Length: 221
Image 1 (cartoon, rainbow, N blue to C red):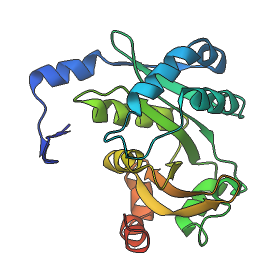
Image 2: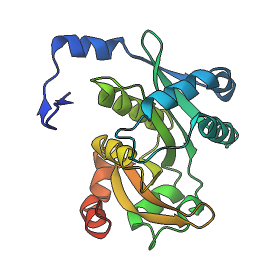
Image 3: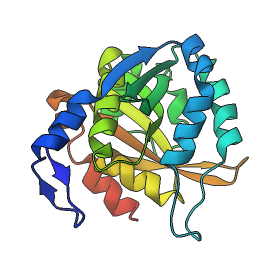
């Protein structure tokens, strides 16, 4: 396990950092338990999505998050994993991708063959959001959350969409191992969404080899 230094280099974690990570407990919660802690989750969202400087992209507000969470809870197969230490420090939630490929509709160009096959076989899972309270080792928490959520559902591929203007979120997902595959335009909200995927396991990563390089060439920045 490694950690990023302030210069973006990787280093081995100190003993105290490892101990901190061991103290973080992950726990699955159902939709009713999620509703019960929705206020805490909204506070976590606000803390995790603070941006600086002021002129940077501003994410949707607390109430927008609560509205979105309410809609997500109603989705078939909704699942959430929370991270706790002295309190709530992170969460990840999402739902399975339907085998008909509807989730990928609007993607510029057809999804790569490997992604289509994984979707048709029920191996893809959407992670709607990953929230982690700011902490020197927040990357570790995020990686553990996404891994737990995907492995609990025996998923071979994670998928997500991020507003292209939300550079902090894009940077975070990329640092957690996610790869760009394309963009989707949403006319109703006039939003351009970047689509990212996360291979689970060496076999899936090998099937999607070269995906990151091609995406970065076509959609830089």
